[in-house]
Length: 430
Ligand code: IMP
Image (cartoon, rainbow, N blue to C red; front, side):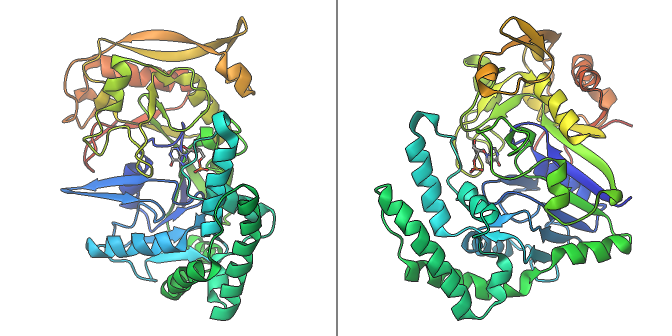
């Protein structure tokens, strides 16, 4: 069957982009199904490092069509900047190679201003959003007040009118919260320019996908964010407002489940999280500093979108087990194994203790989660540099044991492990 869905198994930033780029080699279409420019997917090709926020990570393959699905929320002005930036780096982006769903919702400056206002109002309880307007845009979508990419195909006046009234509606809330009003005219001009540029790219991507699947084309569905940031299944309310999990791929692209062959979970070999919310395996001190890196390298643990340092900790099997159950992974991939080289020992959180009870799946409430103590299993570390390994057998024995133990605890096979940022730095199990 032609569909592979690739999903982040943790709190986002698992390194999904490099695996999508790898899968794209043997696919016809790469389609993103959720989120917006809160995401940051980094793909390293030779000397160049590309940071994508909206455009799917298959875009570097000439014969792959990229789709931005209806489940996404799109800031059109930022999308135009991203397209032009990639074009300037020599990446060919044409309406034949990039298709944007007419049903994807538009993020307006009003959403961005509201995101900020809400975070300020939350005070100590702030979610730590990326301030890209994601939550307010999805709120307008579910509140049936959103503007969609397809509305850009209308005549200029009608589209401008929709924007004006959306901005004016938000201005009332902004003023109530002591924030500055937005100038609808100024905003509309930028958005009208973006609309003129993007029009040729906007189509009904669900029908396009249906026809392509009937022709036997291979499709990779690219997840953004991660399972634990899912609006339903994540650690609510410290989540994003979309569905990065498996169901979101189907709704966010308008495809049926009968074509799905594989559901791949990507997990980093340790845990990271940005923004607020409990993280039971979080570390503070030299191990966390080693995992995070200094920020000098693009692969260090600093947000691609916001530049914020990420919280780092040991790998949390309790959360991974949960991600397996929510998504039904058929296989998992591990990223950034090379970063663990040089540690004497490694820990895996195999269970939590919460109020005296041992739990192998996360508790439902954040209050309980914040009282969870991780119960660790300790494994030997390895000292060797593994960045040159290409087969599983070449990995030091302790690294092989680490990977196999994770697979056993999650009851899902792990056949691919990344050992560096470059395209070819992959260890594959034969
Ligand atoms: P929002 O998606 O900007 O509303 O942010 C909600 C939460 O999701 C915050 O904790 C963000 O840090 C987190 N988040 C959103 N996108 C990403 C991502 O791509 N990687 C990691 N965390 C993210």
